[in-house]
Image (tube, rainbow, N blue to C red; front, side, top):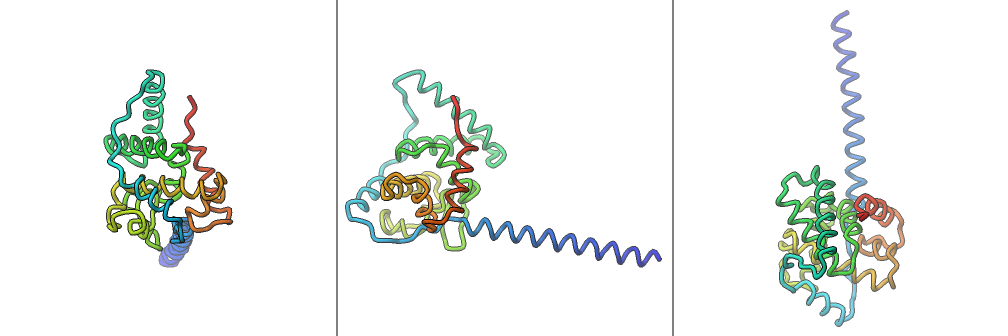
Length: 214
């Protein structure tokens, strides 16, 4: 009788583990399906040269502000975003450096910082060395061909934080301009799924999680 109970217990445990594995696999596939896959497409020489100039600029300096109010606002943003990101990036120095770069590159490209953070949450889950099944790399899941089209031809640099964010923000800005300001279509183009709703909706939903209210 005891042996029968042991067998039944093990069978039940096996079924539970199988269900868990199935849902983990299903979740993993859903994450892969939404990862970045920008398409290499023909772009005007003027656009290519402008992008190349953007990504070739030096590393961001420490921010300076003419008004004390702007500096205070920035420090409040930095502190609040650091608290929100703490679970995903436990090391404080890494987290602050990351957020300083997000702020600089977002502002430089004319993008909302919350949008950029929301996109990264969807694309890579804030993993520096994330690689999608199609080869997109880093925080913003930039495809390697961009390093050839507008960079120095070294795709390994896409794993560098500042380089990855510089490319990602510049490319997203280009797509927004190409789509006449239509963010839905621009996000779809960034993901290589233009016209489909899943990716833009996911980014826009995550944008709300990173909004900063003064």
